[in-house]
Length: 207
Image 1 (cartoon, rainbow, N blue to C red):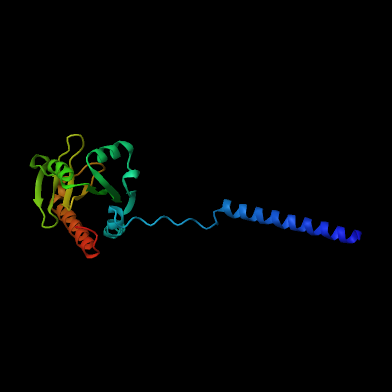
Image 2 (tube, helix red, strand yellow):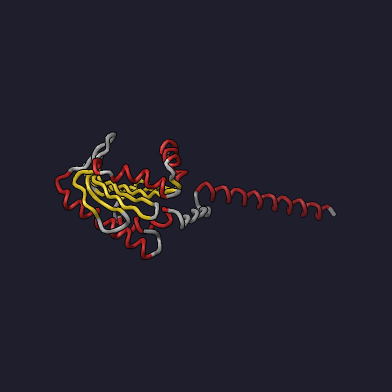
């Protein structure tokens, strides 16, 4: 019966070796990055990011995207606290670069009209704008140079509707805006805003 015991011992050793080989193979796969990757969570379609991301990505297709913020939790802590104190319930942002031109797009929603209007009144006050032009979409929309006391002036498009405000910062000289081609640049922003809002309406994404 010795041969039976020897055979069983050999079988156990073979099984152990096979198990060890499987463990090593799995470890190699994980280290090499060949293991299946977890799919990214689907964005909330009722959020500003979920509503506008595909539209904005298409709008600036071909530009290099350097920033994407999906919700309040992803904003820097100080800015997030300021948003919450102002009544912001949802805030998304995108940033794109094309040569010397930089585009920043923000979409912010507020808990109620009173909170929303307290912020909007400071944005649309005439003293904050240079060479503004009213636009025919949204409840309020305009484009022009926005004067910021703590930052450089920027070409700016603002539009709002249903307690949500959306705006675009446009820089064409690093962190600055050069006014040399301002009529052309204002038209570019006005057209971009119109396309974004029209596409959003078509898919039932607000505005």
